[in-house]
Image (cartoon, rainbow, N blue to C red; front, side, top):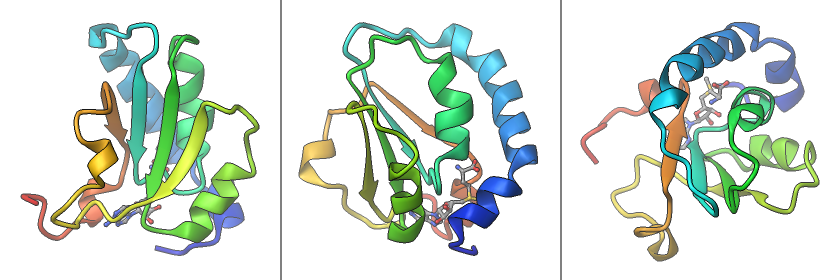
Length: 123
Ligand SMILES: C[S@@+](CC[C@H](N)C(=O)[O-])C[C@H]1O[C@@H](n2cnc3c(N)ncnc32)[C@H](O)[C@@H]1O
């Protein structure tokens, strides 16, 4: 995928619309609690996470972590917010290990239009 964050942010209307429709259907089943930690896997430059997911989350979450394999896209995302609860982390979801500090850490994990890029989804 192209790593030009500005380009992606200008051309992801379909992704934002689809994520919006999906979240409208699914979020009613999500039990959010005060202090929840949330991850978005394959967040790219942050449009879907920050413009679609974030406004639908209860405001009492503790952490929203945007993960992606592309540091360039994550830097673009990081520059879009000054909310101290929101951070970015470079991560390859296809790796066979996860960082130790992620173990049992997240209450909710989202991913939009990323897992289709992963060859071996059994990892
Ligand atoms: C089509 S974009 C989707 C971005 C955003 N979630 C959205 O819905 O608009 C796919 C993203 O998955 C990321 N990605 C691809 N392979 C990945 C991997 N192995 N680990 C983490 N992220 C990956 C890409 O860098 C890209 O930002």
